[in-house]
Image 1 (spheres, rainbow, N blue to C red):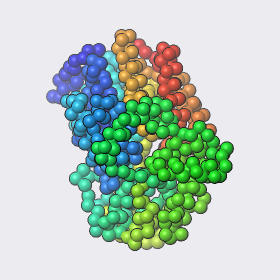
Image 2: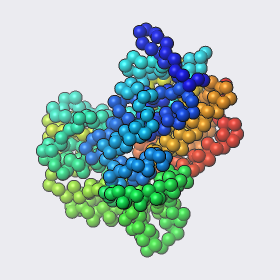
Image 3: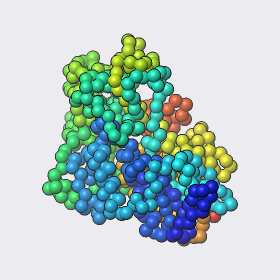
Image 4: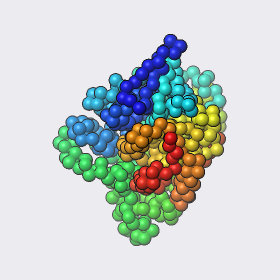
Length: 545
């Protein structure tokens, strides 16, 4: 491989040969570009959006903001964080975009990024050991390696709602929100879904919409965000802790600067347990989820104690007892924490407002969308704006929506139709030189994004350097290694409570999708240990030529 890129003219357009084509300009893709370029690889990013940021290009709906504290929702390099200040502990989408522009100015990334270039297909050339990659604008490339950094939320899920196209108002999925924005003031707004984006839109719309109708299937076990403004003095004090906080990421289950308490809730007295819960609750953010007692996600009785504490805290904020039962049911619909909790600021208080109403879809399902609004069993809810906060075909969807064909001509979508097989969550047999970061059965949705981008990203970089140094041009996984990894992931998750919920973690939010865990459930340190085991054994599980 060389550090130069060559163009071949075919059909009036240039076919660019390069060492590595990275798909996606979010945290993971940009990290790959910077590291690989410095190591002498010829590399380019193709990005479907018009700007940097990955999901933070697409996430611009009202109220969109990060649910990870700013200190570790950024790259860990001191030359990047030393002079950058977020204004809030949990930054808004537009400030995250400004951060990416700052990184671009520092690292000069955009010169090797092709924007508004959505990859539509790729075929592996067995003779040349290269991919032929196609984009929707007619672009083609022949990289040696194709590194997919599409993230877990690259394919928005729009449910099959009868009559949706007949709606006379405006409708948008939160992940496909118009870049110019949409003013909800004075409008009758309907929100379908109460996941992370739904909670954020509902909070925002409740402030100035004429009316907000929330269509809820499953209540969100949301946690208090504890938002803070950050002045320069506060930032300076926080930055003294940054090196230690970044170092902790590789030692914590989810790549955060917090981890589980090495004690079981079941072993404590009710008073000790409650005191622990109260401390975590006041800390805010994900502490009540990811820095809690070590048995909460494994033991049903211990999990019930966490749910009961959560329910008590939430119900105290809702005036109407009947509404409180729908938002924080007496009996949990699923164990606490086995669906990703959203962080909220005043989510439960907005239901005390006269301009906010809840429709329980378990009791009153949607029949169809009409020209006037959404029809349920009790009539039509008239709307001006319909917001679909209905999530994603997560983790695998961003990959399988692309026509990627391996050595036998089979598409990745067809290969994984009955379930994922991907050794270490980074590659799969019969698809040589195709690598995933933040992919299926890697830490992915269980991990802080920037942490995974760097820590898993480093392993991918090391692998590519190894191939170059050894004079190798082809790598894929062994079929047995794919299946062994699949069994390992299934065995681990079977010991947890995650299997008790129909979540996107399990692929259960998409009709017809195989129900299986899509993220590595043993935690980031265990995952990195598995990488080290493979590397120490000469990259066991991979076949290289």
